[in-house]
Image 1 (cartoon, one colour):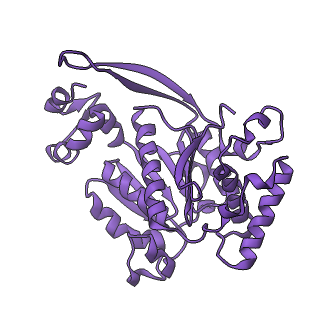
Image 2 (image 1 turned 90 degrees about the horizontal axis):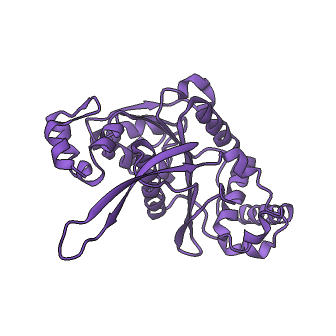
Length: 336
């Protein structure tokens, strides 16, 4: 990459960097190039839900240097937020969560326009979402995420959904038909400079509506069911609990019993053995643990940068951090 030459005139495809911007984003420009940073500086991001995962994603995206970030949340700060939501303090308990997060979020990067919106997603018209480059939906029910995903597709907006349930975290993305460029570096012998070739790529994504409609008992899915990580099935069960109860599960005996009941129903409906979704998958899915928010939020922010910059191959299209396995993995529903 000819980063040094591009940075000297500070202008690429009509975007002019000020001296302050060039200095602030110097490291990022060297990492992913001027073109990518130019696209980031023009992007408008909507982040829905300012819980632990929402705060983590907000931090990473604001530091990345986008044009604007809108923080949307109609809920209030609770005592539990203090364990993972670092944009609010104890003095903010009882205040609207988006408004309480605004001050610290803005301090992260004064060059990014950060605003708060205490409305609920249902209050907004479809046209409201058209002004954004990317929508990141957290702490939303299954049906609301499906609705937002549908609106995003209709408006040509990149869509991400994410949440954390205790030790369990996930990130879903729908970029439609997404074109990108990827660098292939070939080392050269005798201390010669490496050769870099840029190739074009395209990835195709499945909307959430289609993901939730998958019948794993169908012949085309049967061969891969046993190879599918149990975290994928846990994802379906947890979101069904959220949809039915309009809240996340607690560690109460009744909630654990309900989760296992939903697990059994999901397994029976999809013709799979409930043993593939071990009880252990539901023993630590309560609250929002900071390390899991950091891991999941880091992956999500990385994918948002890829989506905006059209640089590097994106993850297609579900990332899950599985607490039982202690590792993350990607499930590609498009190629199922």
